[in-house]
Picture 1 (spheres, helix red, strand yellow):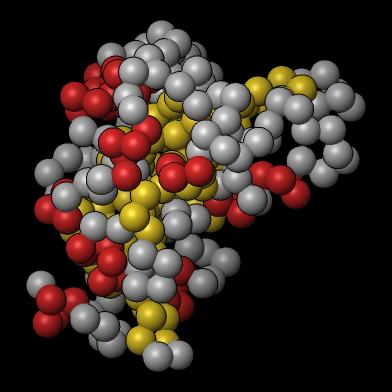
Picture 2 (tube, helix red, strand yellow):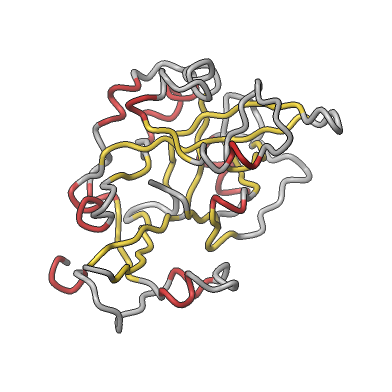
Length: 236
């Protein structure tokens, strides 16, 4: 699964890559480490001409209960295998697809009772293009239209199967030639069950103490912590 992510790209770089314009008030404050369970604001790519701003954790348009975070905590990810079956997703997939630019994501490797965090960053570019879907929900107490998204996941590739060795899942990472077809709903979701190649991802073992701290949103959280146990030395 993907519950911790990062976004450190400049707006101008996002606009260039995805051929979008930049809204005047679009923040580019870097997120070196962001937990999905804090429902962070994210820069998101849709069919619209401008880069969009949305919260991570999809709130379906039909949700009527008092606490929207209750369902948002359960929709940070959407399993590609069941996306056409789940009530939160089935009415919007292929209609409200989006791309979540990511500078890298975090996962845990388990050895017995020990868990070791890894930062998974792109090997060739500065960002991943994660496949996502989004929805619009109206806050009935304020009338505000709230846009939120979920990240698609798929079975892990060989590398991620070694690292995320309990769940063996990973985000759906799109190739450049898939970007426009995905946004336009022209991608068969069954094709997304084939994970991106391991060669796209560079694993970095990082500090568990920092990842679990209240001050994880710092550049140091993405830096190698070679003193920890793990498999990086033998596998790579």
